[in-house]
Image (cartoon, rainbow, N blue to C red; front, top):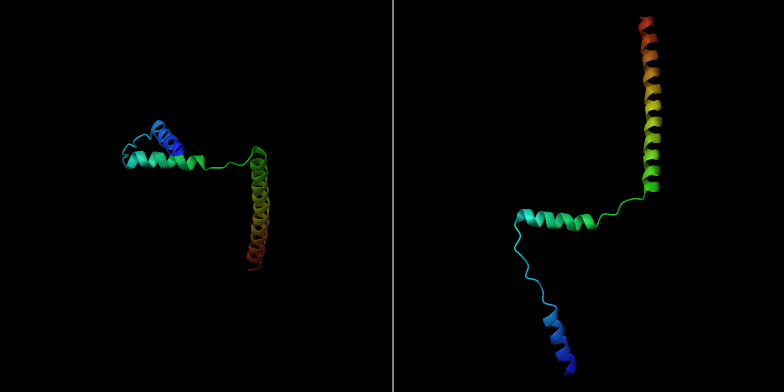
Length: 83
């Protein structure tokens, strides 16, 4: 019986705040805040490594495309001379 009385007393002291009705805009910003808390960001080290890898791959792809383009340009120039 003492436990029931204690449970009732704690329920009275921890009254829940009545929730306000939110419009669509208010709900949007509340959801936005909730979702922002779930974001996990990479460390600075991981970000730099990933960025370096992307830049490296871009440079390699650019060199390959340049090489293929140059070869085709030379081939077309050679074919133009033959005709």
